[in-house]
Image (cartoon, rainbow, N blue to C red; front, side, top):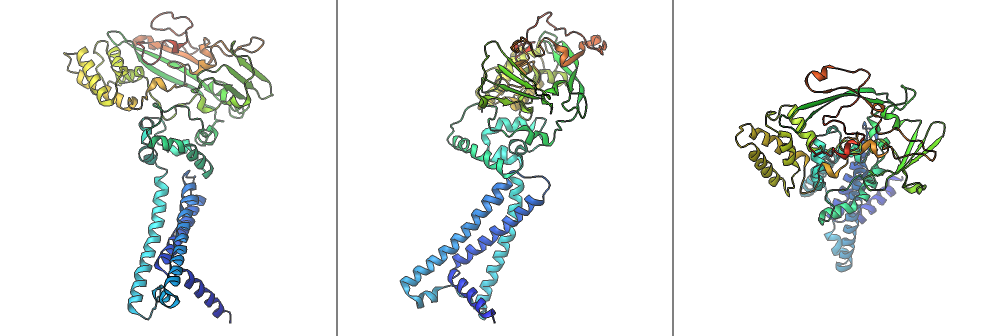
Length: 498
């Protein structure tokens, strides 16, 4: 007995809102958006791992199309209402949408309409799925939206994290940080469109998500890494490009007493200790104040002579992975390193006299564009080696090196982006361990002159000298002779002839 009233209500509702094709199309659009929302929500709920862009697709884009469809439904109702007022009820009823299944043409039109609606729903599902994957791709970040980030995109492709998606580090999982990152980047979008942005792009990124939420999803901070042996192949800037190799043992150590002794370089990230600091420059290179809190709650404050006041709490930053590993995916290699690598791998002729010096000079020259750089590199090397047939291979190698590490249009290269790993070309460790930070009673940190605190020199030199391996370490011998206690980066800045 209740079927008739319910049918009457349904008929009145459909008759009220679906009197025009616009309303019916809006209804289909809303159904498609609701379907896409359910589909994306299911992926977000059950998929392994999270897509940082899922928040915008499922909770912003899909609802936006849903309400757009509702708007079309209301628009159709409003249009039909205006017709009724202008033409009268009888004439408006004649123009209203009416489907009579007893008529072949109506059945045919309805068939095409339902077929189109079905295709629309299928395309919505497929499009949502493909959009889901595309928005987390490197191409989306590096080529579609962020063309101004070409230097970062190219260096990323040649970096250690080239198989890690951009969004995994810059945003991470969850809709909250996605919204935060995009809101904070709203001005950058405007600046890009108006060509009103800094060159080079300033770093570090002030609103970057903490490393605990991103890096540590892959890198286990409690792992005991122990010691690592590294070999560095260098070449002197003399006529023979004399090789000079250093083989050393890095005391990486670990930071969790449950998995090994707490010590070494990774002591700084010990779960039991907390290291805080302030930096007085935007790139966090000048660090005059450091506070260390150990597992027992003991606090030690190290400060330079010029900085003895307590900094405001808002300026204090807790040290994390990024403070040392600050170029994990976008490393701009120094000219010295790049030329030495080419020599070590045999990509250029090592018999070209003073090649390292000429090659570095060619790379660091001031060029306005990459085309100008390619021509300038070729001219400099041909002038230096007019009669050597192997110079063409050296020219091509330097041009390749320049193309993936120097970006004159964006003014991006190694000397504007500090790399805090180590202490050779940038201050790095010596930002704090510089013999200038001390407590109120005069106690200092590990000094920069105490080389064996973080590494041991196992072998050094060239030829037969490398056969002498010192298991307990030996004193570092600079190829230029005694240089005293100078910090490495005071002379080695990536381009000086070493």
